Image (cartoon, rainbow, N blue to C red; front, side, top):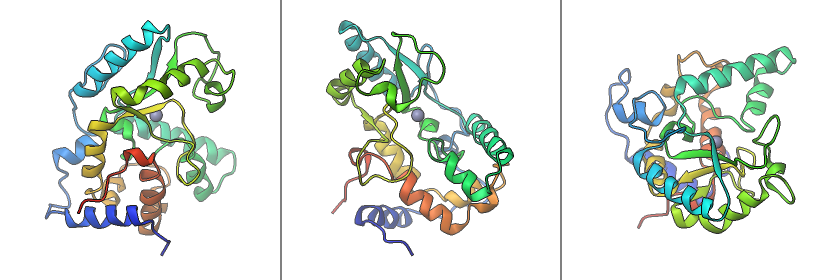
Length: 246
Ligand SMILES: [Zn+2]
């Protein structure tokens, strides 16, 4: 077994303690919501977030606009099916490039989640860029947010102000963080997503990922899922992790 950090060990224990008796074949409505298979109530023009996150987001964009930063949403709520399409498209492409299934899964999970495990399913997380300056091609590249990059002013503003509106970077540059690569565009509305993470850790990931037409799903062994949980799902900014309860 891999060495487990104290925090994730606590989270795992915590999640097991909360497991309730459940029909293995019927997923609860909460499970469906947390895995992008429900029908969440979403608010927003040009994006979709749960209400409290949308209200905070509107306040933040207005404040940014006063400082001449016009925020643009690239991605917000994403359903399981949408994530499945992304995953399977990448898997098929990597396969034609000659990657083994293991290499393929590793490559996709540099930036993309396994369907059913995306924080974008929650309606609390959002990918942001600035309207100006215009950038051609792929806009979600870390270098565009650094140094003299086109989104450096946005990043600087967000570094200074986002937390006061409840938004936090998820996939930070922290050295000790594992899992997904650094994503300077991906923010989470902490007051809601922290709660959702706690609920999410009570779910049976293995059954959620089974028989969903996810390419490569036969490689999601118990051991792999444990690794994915510890390094990817919990490989987030320490600010977003649950605190130890006494
Ligand atoms: Zn994202």
